[in-house]
Amino acid sequence: MTLLKTLLKPLFEVSPKDIPAFDEDNPTTRRLKQVVYTVTDCCHLTFVNSRFDVLVPRLDAYEEELRGFAYEGAGTGLAALDSFLPWKKRTRDFINGPGSHYTYAVLLGAGMGLARIRRNPEPFIAALDNVFSWSVMDGYGFHEGFFAYRHTVEQQVVPHYLSSY
Image 1: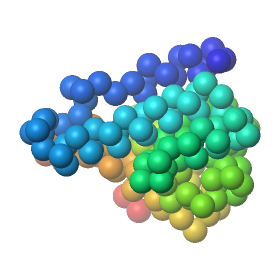
Image 2 (image 1 turned 90 degrees about the horizontal axis):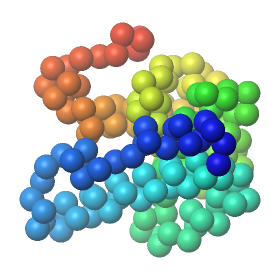
Image 3 (image 1 turned 45 degrees about the horizontal axis):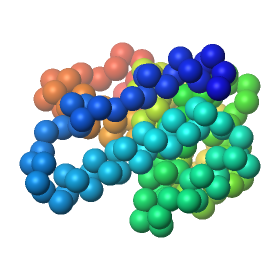
């Protein structure tokens, strides 16, 4: 793992206290946690080795019901790597290649990754040239509403670098 990937991994850790409090005995809560941890684990897999020939078999090993979330996690990691090493265009290459069947999930994850590291998603979206690139903003908004509910939803704070469209 490169130095950058080693530095990024802690930024993408998710602990139980990061997940909004729900009734622990509720099956919906258990399922939500399973999804969150799948996305997180696959983001970390991407940091360990982002080569598609290594990454894709690991993502495809997830049961079908969780596979889209696995690809979402890969999108999270790829977008983070692209933000710091933009000349590689991993996310774009992934959705135009082996991740094409999961384009929406990958781009949703990319938005979550950009939100996690506080990057402006608009230049990232412009560089994608993909009909589904709007889903990057969807992922960005989901991340902020889920992990920063009070700040984003209750206080309605909008990051200064986002345009008002």
